[in-house]
Length: 158
Image (cartoon, rainbow, N blue to C red; front, top):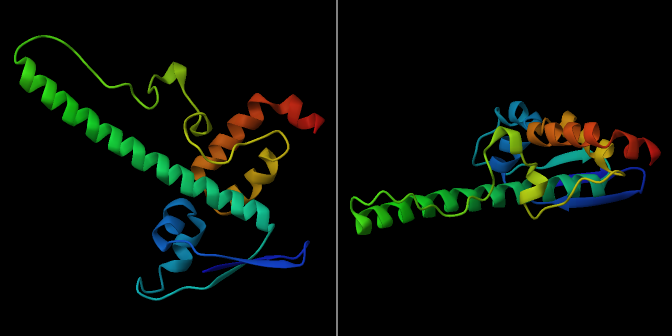
């Protein structure tokens, strides 16, 4: 259980979050939770903007869901390749399922282009970057920095 205390709005929100996701995506908690047994329930209190923390959790859940789908897609591709290879025997056809994203370095996509989670906007990119850096959500930090770099003039106007 994560208790988020938003002092500026004088509110408190509770979030339930799996320990494995917490440690995988928010590296900040890795060192804090090493001393606690995996079987123990944990209550964590955080003082921050509750809406921003909720955005971060939505991002993590969405990335996790995207990664699962991507993994399933890779498994489906392998099954498809085996089935086609078996049925076509020695024909030299190279059939593939459409990939979820392009791995070509020149056509690099942002995670925000391919998943169904919350999006970065001009008005929230810096506000998201700061807690993402503090909580050590590395992938999100890189995405924020890329977004800010690409849209610095628009962000400065906001």
